[in-house]
Image (cartoon, rainbow, N blue to C red; front, side, top):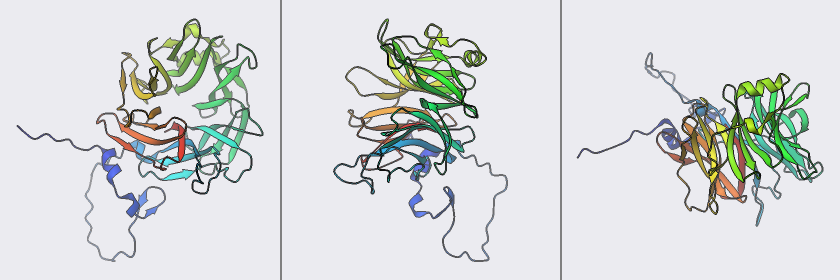
Length: 360
């Protein structure tokens, strides 16, 4: 019988590079140490097609907090929640916001890359101001460039508009969460959805042609946790002055018996990454094929008691990033190559930090 073998993919090869031994100029460009002889015969091949994967040059943004028990974590003695970014290639972590020295607890969460990649939309709150509000920060320095109104879990609809989740009828028995959008320059707010009493929209993802994907939790008329879609044209009609999209107009893309949340569109909008679970078992991540409704799970962790959550696609749609860990105690970022099934752990904080809210 012929021997069978497989050729490693680009991410497998990248994961094996000894990056810790290569001096780096900037985040990705390697250079040689010391002096280079003046006369070095180097032949450069002509017309060599080099195609690097798009994910190689994109950082994954996320929020994280330390778990300083029993002692400090790299000098951190509190569980302040800050924004970070990590290179999908090298695993290099950069801190974007830094509230370690603040005596007041502050929470920066759920970063979303702007289309230009120069900014991050986040929601932020503190003990002094516990109601979450939206902000736009510089992706390199963490400096706040725009402070907006109440809301959480922002995503970019376009370069000047944020979609986000906001509370409707707060302080009443009918309080619930719906999707809104806000113009960053003017602060003008438009309500996009009307899920109605008995339903909450907990997570969302936007695709410019496919529209709005939402994680919808319903308690009435029956209990259900599903992923639903509102077409981009319907969102555009609301922004043009139409009424919010009612729950009856949502298109459910997961079966009523399937528990799913945290949707994230693929670049081509033919798939949605989801988090799914069954009673008594921790969440797992999977890929939903929109046309067929088939859900393909990502291989789970060892031990099986760990939680996988919040998958997002790479720019070329070939990989997923998600978190794996122990509930709210700690988690690490993992990468999954869809075609080959290759899994690799990207971050490693020795179970001392929780990470979440990934955006790639």
